Length: 331
Image (cartoon, rainbow, N blue to C red):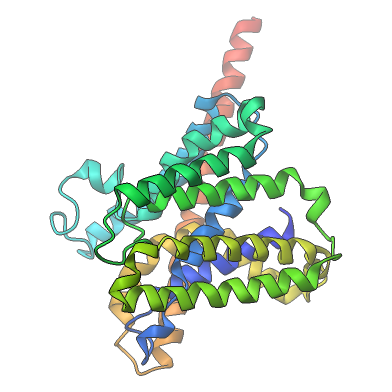
């Protein structure tokens, strides 16, 4: 994998996890950055999955298999130790294990994979991603103006369906960067401007969020928050892609740490909720931070390790069946 993408994936995992540390920090406002982490993760997914080659069922089936195995294992395990209450959050087994699951990211990604596949597979759509993104934004803006409930601030609530518009736009932005990879990667021509853009859009995002959440008269303009965070995503991709060769030259131990976190990003997301609630107040800050973070990393690695060998077992099983079928047909 291109290393700047590995870095962005690791940063996304850290930001999403940090946003859930409300009870860990003595000042709850420090626990932020979750939406930035989410859109980074979707953009990274779009970058990595841009080159679609297989038919839909093969491509989608592989994605679903890779997602649902760890989801099934961790959900079953948390039920087993009574960390999840069957009826408290979702009503039935289908809801817990298939859709929407306990994890909003899973519900979003398994749906957004579908339109993303066709956009990247069909040449006419693939060559016009910018126009598709523009069209989606116009439709979202029309919905926001005429139908969205603007009586309170909720534009960044990840459990609501409307946020998936932002997530899908992020995936398509990642695809655009992959399509123009040779143009953007290691191109430092306008790097100072990209850095300035990232800083300014980041500041604009938090300023607009503070304003929109505190002033009722501004609720009607809350979609501006999406524009600022999307601009930040764009500039972050610009900066990191420009610095890819610099990132490759980081000390080996730093690269290994980044790669370790990036490799278990999904598992970090899946295991963290129960661990945080179990340990966030067990120790005083900052000991609780270290305890929670170490437990999340250990739990995520264990889940990743288990899934890795289950994947290998099924790959071996399928390969064996195919070999036997070929031998039988050749006799």
